[in-house]
Image (cartoon, rainbow, N blue to C red):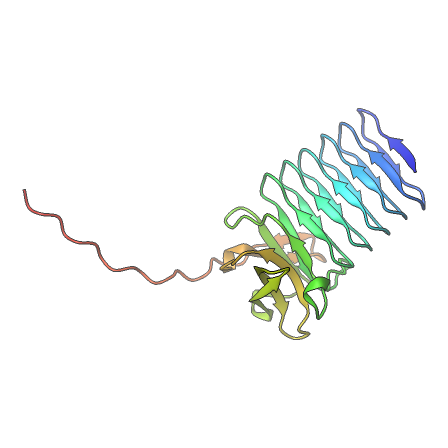
Length: 215
């Protein structure tokens, strides 16, 4: 295992085909794990991190990070800040941490987040916060092409997002999640911008409360 350590300046750090420990330290860094089961820490700064091949543990740490897991069953931690997390291939665990995070699911456009026919094929988001975090759909996919279904995950109730056309499970979240249109965005990769869909419909109004007594 090789230790690759950056500096307090902007660094481009590339791992070996074997397992590495890659530390970005301060400043915005670009970290790439290549092969092997790597351990990567971005440190302070807005980092861009690529796990590539292998079952990697990738921690963005502080600030706003962009993290791609690549191939392998990765564990991705955004840390503090507004992070952009893409598990990519295989089944990954995504932990946004503090901040307003974006979790990419769906198909194509180079992200390769396809899920599979079994619950175990999907990515797992541990800490999705409604009203704060977003789930990004790519390659023109919309919220009308997916469904939220209740599933059994290791004996506990969980919510899965399933693609209607393929039946693939894309992502699983713990507990019961009542998704609305506000929880999703469409990621337009070709144009290089993100569009946010209109808010979902408002739920039914509850009954009026009792009228107070006249003094």
